Image: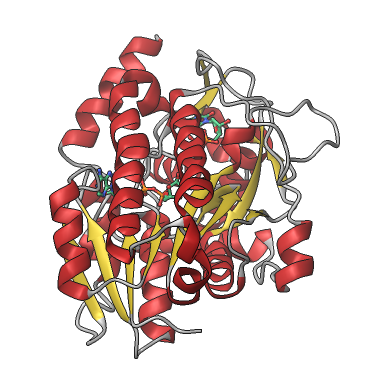
Amino acid sequence: MSYKTVLITGGAGFIGSHVVRLFVKKYPRTKIINYDSLTYAGNLNNLKDIQDKKNYFFERGDITDYKRVKDVFIKYNIDAVIHLAAESHVDRSIEDPFAFAKTNVLGTLTLLQVAKDFWGCSLSNKDIISKNHRFYHISTDEVYGSLKLDKSLFVEGSKYDPHSPYSASKASSDHFVRAFHDTFGLPVVVTNCSNNYGPYQFPEKLIPLVIYNIENKKPLPIYGKGLNVRDWLFVEDHAKAIDLVFYKGKISHTYNIGGFNEWRNIDLVKLIIKIVDKKLGRKKGESNKLITYVADRAGHDMRYAIDSTKIRKELGWKPEFTFEEGIEKTIDWYLANKEWVKDVTSGEYKKYYKKMYSNRK
Ligand code: NAD
Ligand code: TYD
């Protein structure tokens, strides 16, 4: 099965830009339409290398704008959607939960409604529609809540138990996606992935923030005691999983994506210090002194860890990058792309960052 036109929302963001790049290069006969409103997290410079390709199109617009989304569906005769656009940072969701409800819940609902109307979905014709169309919703493992510090893992059937406004908004959007399948026959598929890292991630998230601050000898803020655990996946491996699920995943199914790669925050930060110090020719462990314990994040989930057995067994996916390779590639990219970091961290972000950390003192 191949689609003529695929709408990718949030394609100017971190993961979205990797997905757009992969699809534009791998499927030259498919038109890839990147639909993005370019919030602080969206940056067209992330796609400079493919922006002139014949099968790439950019449309600036908000996913909450029904008319604009519908016009784009009509203009390109959209066959399928990969939906990544979202507000994605937990700390921002604590500052401004409404922005998260608006984009993540109402924006997703708007896209679902346009896709359903445009494709003419109903329960009676769902088998025919699912042959030609697909709505793929990208979600997060954070909807499952928090694990204890034991060996438990999130599986596809784990109970939803979100704790932050971000994860609550993503959980809500997942429910709407499944409801549109059950009620209107929309051909949906959902994936829930663990924490991503890699080039083009906005430096408000832990890994790029720490690389940037080590390089610039700034404090490395560690929330609480630094004992929280996250399961890290290299972004290019996520993009490849998205490609696989988009074409081979079963309609109405959910697939968990993760690398079986758990790190305590403090251990991860110390590893990054070790690598960056070495690359910058600094003394071993010199930047350990930058570690600064700060007040914990409200509602901070203790541990996330994904069981990705289903996608591995059913679709044959596995990460291609080891963590050592991925983190090295990521650090090299940030050290070599100082201009990109400078550009995205100027203006609005600086104000936000200052305010957040002055609140925490
Ligand atoms: P990001 O914040 O880097 O990018 C989000 C993109 O969406 C930006 O380009 C932004 O301009 C765009 N956007 C935001 N609001 C919009 C709106 N109202 N209309 C149109 N465009 C809008 O996010 P990311 O880290 O690349 O995450 C992408 C998706 O993957 C999200 O749905 C997120 O929940 C999910 N996810 C992320 C991670 C992770 O570790 N980053 C892990 C699992 C799942
Ligand atoms: P983050 O990258 O924001 O991803 P998420 O909250 O979606 O997992 O944070 C990863 C972990 O690092 C999380 O436990 C919070 C912690 N953290 C810090 O300790 N300091 C920081 O400055 C940031 C941004 C995160």
